[in-house]
Length: 349
Image (cartoon, one colour):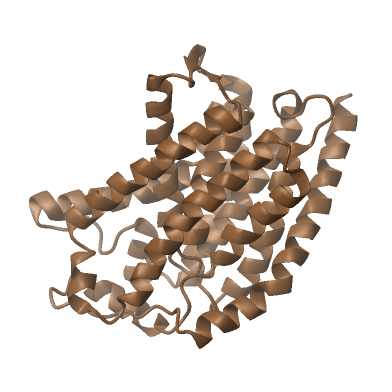
């Protein structure tokens, strides 16, 4: 029985990965041309306060590359899932999360593009108050994400290390909102070096695939392959994006593609009720996010930096590691993480 389910799952994953790859490949070049033609590009400017001086040494040369390449991910994945599986609750939930959180990310990224020559506004964007305001908006967006998880995906309760947590309650929605917000920030913050975010996302999806194979009863009922289809589509689209993001990058992902990944990873983890594995899978993202928070708070309240640049993947660049070395070591670390995630689920799930 398990063998039959596993074979069916792998087959569906492979089929839909190819569908996702072809669908993204059909319009990625026109999208890139559009972004270049209408100057949806980034521009790195050294601030009068010199707050980004280290950043300019490393990435000042990257100005002129489109920063909204994540549009490819934001629109292709939900399109395929909704067209092929409109009646399936999990498909609708994943699609709505991509569209909602991706739209917020698009507006955030668009504001950066439209104000790229406004030095005063760019300086303000580095302020503590600006970041707090964005956090509040992100929380509001993720209240809706929490409701999508509960009402559309139908995940009413989960097992939290032996305790039953009812998600369809005020406390449950609040916990989901906080979790989804941090997941959103965690996958957004990892985007910053050519190939880093998309490679990390692909490896994490492989981790979810291993969990589906190891715990088929958690992900598949009555022979349905919903979770495998989602993983396959995400893999195919990300492969196309990564092709154009390998150094030197033709496009950068930006918030439209990176932000929705976090809540979708959260949903996939909750759907399979694999909380121990989910926590381990997200560790690289959480560590990267934590270094950014530490830096922000240290500058705000103590007036000094902990890292040369935050998050930590840029710190490694600042101390002399080439970007490719940072990326490949993060990828390698993440491969180890997905193996630990399976073990965590075996022993603590």
